[in-house]
Image 1 (tube, one colour):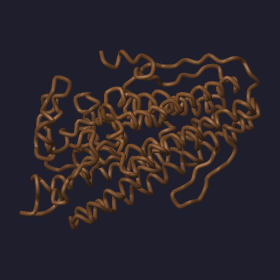
Image 2: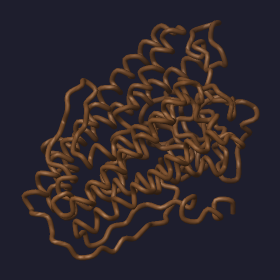
Image 3: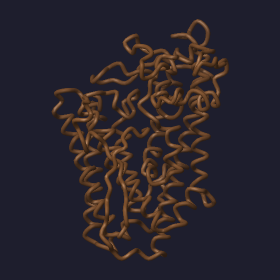
Image 4: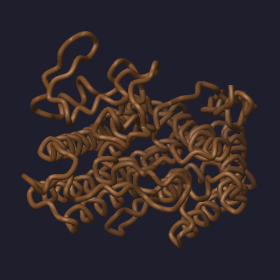
Length: 420
């Protein structure tokens, strides 16, 4: 998610004995190994998505569209586990908006329902529909979009007009092109884009099927190239790995910052509590596909992965080694035990949301006004994430880190501001 909140939770910590440099180095090595494996798995699954998209475009059918959707869903599993590497690693945070920005004004990309509306004061390009328009005006200049290419999406459309809602690239642009809008509100159901939106000739529905295929391919190819780049950043000679390993204290700070910021402001606040407060399915992270329950679950798992120093790869193999948990246990075993318990409690709560959604109680139904059961499920997970963050704060103190800042959220820190 692009960062919408700037509130920070500042933590000044008490002095404690610093961890041994050798121990730090081993922990940071495991952290970098897990990052590399997670991004490499994301790349593997993105390439499988690329193959499925190519098959859909070559021979459109209901089965081919379903195959591309399934590949997208599978691609989200490893990627969501990488989000814990944000916040503390500038290389990741500066890049992330290209691949996972949300929410988006989908009218920028393709046709939308009449109820969606048109341009707004906040976003003049909200209903541009580049797929239907091979030329358009952007910033007072005419843009030639006759060919829809990765360069067009990344260089001219993404965040066009400096509006963050103009998301033209990444997982969620692809998601919209596969599912279409979810017009069910807080009732069950995902988007229902027909496979004929990619058909040729007279079988084409909603027009511009060839350009729609070009956009889908360009966005998917760009996702693959972006993940290739990030995987390289965490390889043996990669810049992100080197940045983490060059300063032990700063590296430990990066781990804790990523854990705390994702746990508190981003997931508990922006992705979960805000949706409950607004009763708004547009606040779902994977709103077109109704996959939000999985995105929340694997975000939580990513936090746990880096603390315990263990990641299960998509092929079933395990990357593991010296962990932050080891360092915290050496400093204060009770703090480590508490944080492990809180991480497990969070995964239990997120697992209950996942189980309920898979049984038919979808996340958008949970967000409905008056859905006491849905609110209880979501807020139990929010509370678990907040409690988990408090345990991370205690780990910060135990390790003697001088200062750290976690991302905040108005929904947690100043709820009245949400409605202003």
